Image (tube, rainbow, N blue to C red; front, side, top):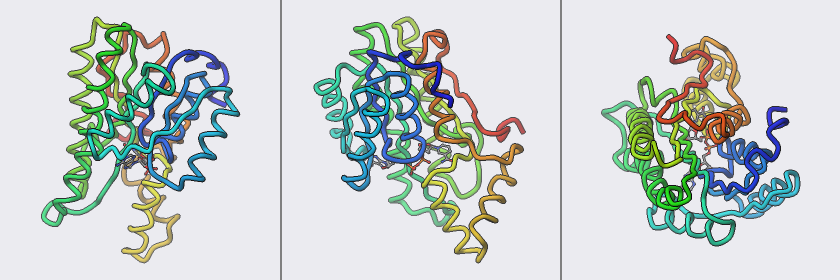
Length: 268
Ligand code: NAD
C-alpha cells in the first residue's frame, strides 16, 4: 500500500481537501490522513454516508477528521470553511483545491450557466481559498498548496471549452502564487491527472454509452485509447501519494510546477 512508510510524515499538519466526499478528493484525504494529517473534508453527498467516511478515516488512521458542507460556488462559504477549520482543527497548513465539475458540449451549444458554474468551481474557488489561507501560512512560514488541475490544464480536447479554460487558469494561478510566496516557506503546485476512475468520469462514460448505444466497458476502453498511451486509469490513491510527496520536506523547493500523472497523455 502506497501510504505505508509515510506514517506520521504530516503529523501536526492540518489539511483542507475541497470536494473530498468522492473520487480523487477522497483518495487524497485518505492518503493525507494515512500520513498523519488532521483533515477537513468538504463536498456534497448523503449526510449519513459522509459521517461514515469521516468516522472511518479518523478511526483507521488515528487522526482528527471534520467535515464542512460549504457550497464552494459561494465565495463567502469558502472563507467560512477556512475559518471553521481553524476553529475546529487548527490553522490550515495544507490546502488541496480539488473540487471540480464537468460539462461536455461543443462551443456553439455550450450553455452559459454551465460555463459560469465550471469557471466558478474549477477556478475561482481556488483563488478564494488560496486568498483565505495564505496570510496565516506566511505568518507561520510554512504552507503547501496543491491544486488539482488536469491534463486539460496543459492540452485541450474538443467539447470541453469551460473545463479546459478553467484548468489552464488553475495552472496559471499556481505559477503566480508560487512566485509571490517563493521566499515565505509556502509552495504551490498543480497536479495534472489524465483519466482517473471516479464518479465524474463514470457520468461522462454513461452519457456517451447512452448516446452511442454502446456498452459502458467499451466506452471506457475507447476513452483510454483516444488519449492515453498507457491503457490504464490512475487511481485516486496514486494522486493522493503525489499530493503527500508535494507536502513533504523533500518537495520544499518544488513550486510553480504542473505535474502530469497521465499515462503519457501529454507526452504526445
Ligand atoms: P467527483 O465528481 O468524484 O468529485 C468531485 C467532488 O467535488 C465531490 O466531492 C463533490 O461533492 C465536490 N463538489 C462539486 N461541486 C461542489 C461545490 N459547489 N461545493 C463543494 N463541493 C463540490 O470528481 P473527481 O473525478 O474526483 O474530480 C476531482 C478533481 O479532479 C476535479 O477538479 C477534476 O476536474 C479533477 N480531475 C479529474 C480527472 C478524472 O479523470 N476523474 C482527471 C483530471 C482532473
